[in-house]
Length: 417
Image (cartoon, rainbow, N blue to C red; front, top):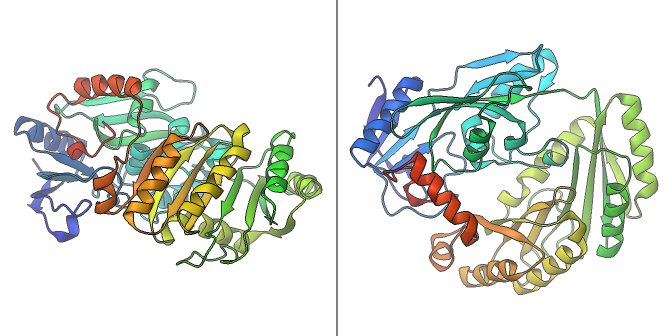
């Protein structure tokens, strides 16, 4: 095996657990061999990309081997004529989009984490505000190469958008958190970089006015590329920039429009006529900073970070629920949500007992689902399961796990399967 192999150290810890060994494969064959030998020797294994989400999932009891994709970071094939690209798992999203920009194209995925890699983004199906228009990584993925736990290298899908052979395998891998196989590379459909962009930010004291504006924009012919709401903590906490007043109860609606300059200008005027909140417009560098701060905000605040989903038509009920759990958290709860897609992040400060009570309340509600704890202290993880999969889907996923990873070595039981 031509991989670099070394003893694990504190810098390699996965959610506080130091692995016995770290393996850094140089190519796909080495990656497959690292997993094959782990299966043969029954070594509990975690695949690591940029390491930006290693705290997500259950805490492992022990980890024998971390397999890093850090050296699988040189391969990018851009088929600009087909609007597709293939990238190694260790390539960062930033690195990929810098190369695609030379031809005026991009992969429309945003991440809160500077070092997020393609493999990690697909494995977690991590998506930000751009999912309103473009979907999650799973929706943009058209092909994937995998190293299986038994040492096989397999491919699914293709290099052009119309080739859908094996596409379901890519869907299984997206969001599997490294529990099934290791991603070698991924192929995506791309989009042209918009010529112009502008964002309208509307501030409200009345949540009902805000939800009415959301409904008006959602029912119109407008096509924002991002459509977000944010609710700041109701009392002072360690805060992200531009997150609103710490004392007044405010809500903000962010509407991002991107197209040709004339189309953006026309859409801006249409949105301005619909907004009843106090609105301002951001463009160019100011707009970029706004969205960068907004995407990172849930992770800059103190506390547990919880991902929830809801039916977009139930936003009124969801906001009522958010207000209820904000009171439970003594005001130290904030929300950042995709109102058009029905998905968001809640950051809950306070002690683990309070956080657990809020999460339990969210899971008991009929208005939100898929309540998943992404960031949590060890104390909180000892009180609740970070995953909340129903029994039916869990049985199917466990059967899938058995098919892919019969030895059960992948992801050290950190979940979701």
